[in-house]
Each structure stands twice: as C-alpha cells, then as structure tokens.
Image (cartoon, rainbow, N blue to C red; front, side, top):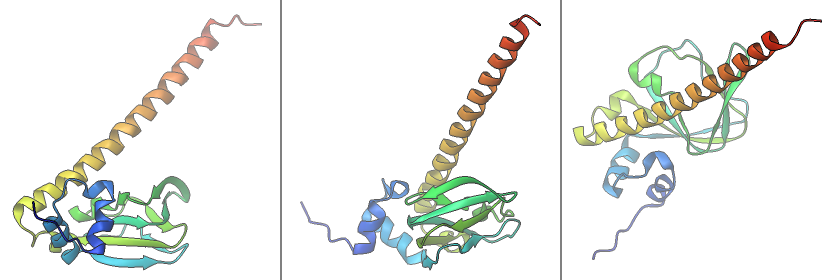
Length: 161
C-alpha cells in the first residue's frame, strides 16, 4: 500500500466537513482554483444586493449573517456561505467577520474549469449543505408554529373572567 504525502493545505481541508469524501487529488485541484483570504474583525465579506460568482468556506474564525440590520445567523469555522453567488444571484444578506477569519473562496468560473466529475461532486456537497440548512429552518419554524398553536388553543380553552 502506497503512503500518501499530503500538503499542509490539503490536511487543513480534510479536517473540514464540507471536504470530507474528496480524494487528496481532488483537494489539490480545488486548492488550485480556490483563493485564500484573511479578513480582519468587523470587515464586511459579502454585501447584500451585490452580485458576484463566489462562495466561501470559513476555514478559521467566525462571522455573522446580517439581514435588515439584525444578526440572523452565526457562521463558524468549517461552514460554507455565499453559495448563492455561484448562481450569479444577488446576495440576500450581509456577512461580516466577528473576529479575524481565514477564508477559502471559490469562483464559479474557476470551478467550471475543473473536471466534470469534480464539479458535480463539489456542487452536490453545496446542495447537501443547503438542504441541511433548509431542513433545520423548517424544523425550527414547525416548532415555533406548533408552540404558537398550543398557546392559542390554551387561550381559547381558558374561561373568560
């Protein structure tokens, strides 16, 4: 059995859930097209309404999703964000670093230069992540709706004074 020699950057990616299941050769190809960026605290990474073709992997640090001037989510190390950018759609919210961050950005045009099988694998991982977020959001909404319904039912059952 041959011993694989992995670069330090490949080792970093292997520790990120999004990249699990990619072969070391595939990770090397992704590293070739990815762009590393270091971001200072309180720096805006994504601007609501802007269009670009990038998505990001937060390799290290923490960031906040801001919508209507309210923090609606926290992005932690190993999370991906901005994937709507791969479709060329306007950004839905701002993303701002809450501490120093290390990002790996992927541009849709660069991803399109990868072998087709790797493109499909990468986009499937993006879809898996988006679907998991949607399921979590749906479950939270369902619980809130269920609790509200229970409160409303309790109020209607309470005798009026």
